[in-house]
Length: 424
Ligand SMILES: Cc1cc2nc3c(=O)[nH]c(=O)nc-3n(C[C@H](O)[C@H](O)[C@H](O)COP(=O)(O)OP(=O)(O)OC[C@H]3O[C@@H](n4cnc5c(N)ncnc54)[C@H](O)[C@@H]3O)c2cc1C
Image 1 (cartoon, rainbow, N blue to C red):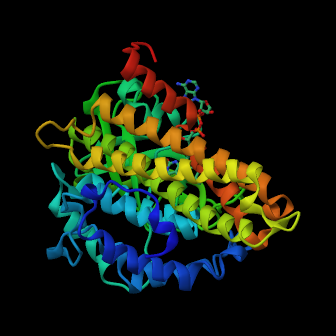
Image 2 (image 1 turned 30 degrees about the horizontal axis):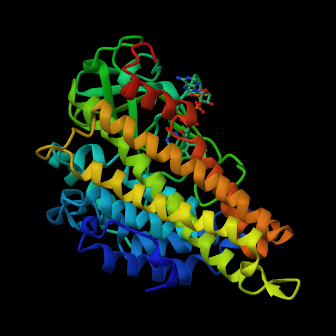
């Protein structure tokens, strides 16, 4: 047990798979990522350092197979009763090392969950896409292309807007879907992804759940164009860019489920993405604690260790307290996901679960942004010194606070649930 493992977790929530999976990811993070992560920001375009670390984790250790059923060559994790808690643990371990790599890896599972998690399973598509991920030792990525130029938050706000603002269209022509549209920002775009999950509409402007379609599009189909990666404040392990779909034809069977069910299967991705985001954030905060511990235990002020100074102790005590609370909340959010479909549990697509999980993500994001700032106050210029890795996490985690609809959507979803708002 490492000393940062002492932060609280509701022990009764922990899955038996937690320990062995964390051990594998921690070992990978400490040997393949943490020693070189300081150079990732210069590697944002080429991924010469980043790619071998992905190959090791996703291809050689096989994490990219993990969600597929055993009979398709996978590990069957999408069938686990602890799916959200296992994902949370993996995201935390990866986030401790590099939240950019963590999101690129996590998002590879994201679109696939629409066809792998009960009750929305499509075994034919699982069998069809599994070899792409399971029969190779190289990292293979997928992307969930939701955001469009006119606004990503509205597309994620399925509870209120029900997909009315989606402009990417799908037209059925015989045995093929013909897709047209422009997506921006998906993780693993920028030329990385081999497979896109594309939320689109068969009737633009309609809020009927039946016209919402989630269609898989292999990246090498005619009419798919990916732009180069954007240069961001951080998170260089993840590439984001433009994706254009122009008269792209895919087989009819590439629609995840069909009218009505696609909207439900897609909506569960929102909570999944938020739980993963909380894992990235608590992981980065565990590493913050490690670095801060080292700093205040080695630097002195008036010949006394910094941590023994009242003013410093008040700040670092609050930071550690916040990490402790955030980690409990993260496990609670994951458990809400795992209680789906169970007696007394709420469906994952209910306003209650979507609103409450978004609320926890917003809360933990704020604590993370505040605490990296406070740690920099304590560390002074060393907080901005790349040698300490704090400023790297600080730039990376700010992005987590802003993605998936931003702060406002989190607040709207929470207000809608707790105050029964009808127009937000
Ligand atoms: C590293 C990274 C990874 C990403 N990964 C993905 C991905 O995998 N897939 C994907 O599709 N997208 C991805 N995104 C895009 C991201 O999810 C969107 O940027 C985000 O959802 C916000 O959408 P937008 O930028 O279009 O802003 P808009 O939706 O245009 O919102 C603009 C502003 O309005 C605010 N706003 C939104 N709704 C309301 C409201 N109801 N009331 C008041 N204010 C509101 C927003 O908070 C924001 O501040 C990623 C972005 C980054 C940076």
